[in-house]
Image (cartoon, rainbow, N blue to C red; front, side, top):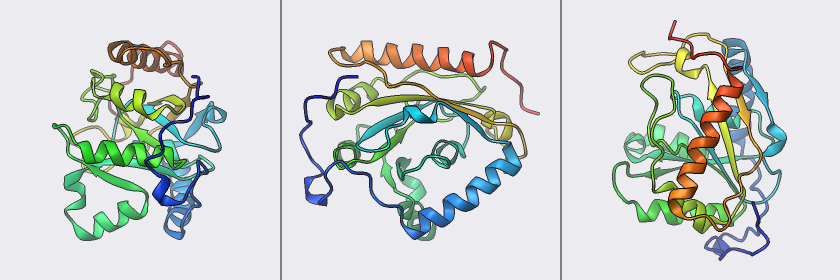
Length: 229
């Protein structure tokens, strides 16, 4: 993806100039714990981590298999990651405090949330990596669902590298309807940034859909998906 044209900087008020924020204590401690936990419980293994830029804003888009996906995508990266989280998760003041401390911010699901879009653009311009799940919700069967068309607007306006990623195994570890996760091997793969410059909205959505699906097939080694154990 071409990024030679500098984007408008809605994050200028933050004082950051495209450099990634330094991890805070909560993030550092949480990452250390989660690295141990994901290794022991899920034998977490990653491919292509070098495709995530080490500096500057980047949009990390992934399929969504379970609640633990944000952790799986971020736990081994050498920099902090921001997340969108559905707004009702912030209703509990203690949990809301926790996820805000881990760089999450709220988005109202099922409607056009302009404030969330502005916050996403601000963070990207300020040099953050922002993780998003373009399906909009967790899968019901382990497969990739419909890509939400609103994703294209953020991609076009952000003008940062768009890195695709796929997760396989977290649906089996924690499918819908199960209260807690259980051990199961999980694999994550990061792909090279996609070339989206000059594409129209529907072309961006189609590209995301094709890229994630082909990457998931590759990550599975061409094998059919596993059923929850």
